[in-house]
Length: 246
Image (cartoon, rainbow, N blue to C red):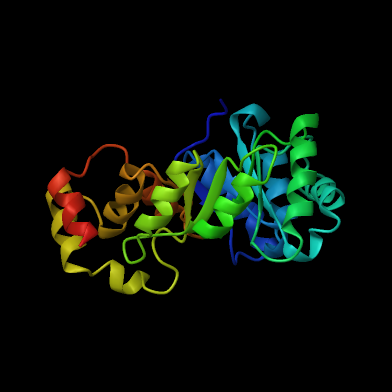
């Protein structure tokens, strides 16, 4: 029953010293979902922005992720993340990867969820076999699975399995971490973008949104942040979606 924005702002690889400014810029242009992680080393920067932004806490959707080395002390690490983020609850928390004792960590998250410290719990980078395994051996099923998916890595099988278990799929790297320069000149995306008076990047983001996938694009430039979130005034046709799927 928890509502989650379909687009958010990711802070992967942003230095902690620059994170506060970037998150404040993102919030100022309309982002309300902010995605960080313990291993990013910038939760404190996100916390400073949350404290200074002037937006009521209940209008923000804050996500962080538990790193593998903290699985054995998951509860303690969650409380430490809350301290860095300057919040008394976290909207969504994810196990970052399916390695180590993630069952123990998941049970801790279930308990913290039931205590009300976490509004939602989920996983990240869980392939279908790991997702099926944890869904079948838990009290509370993961609510979100954050994975890499974009026009060059569409993960249709993963998408089907997430839907099968009622898990919301979320895309990190929705513009591709390594092929973004190729993406913005891709002939198919360029052609479709011209029809809608949009950019190829906006078309790529819209593609995932229409697949009912939450996206968290990252940029350190305010004008690009604004461009990335401006994807709700057009719709790709069935034929355009099929062209991109090819």
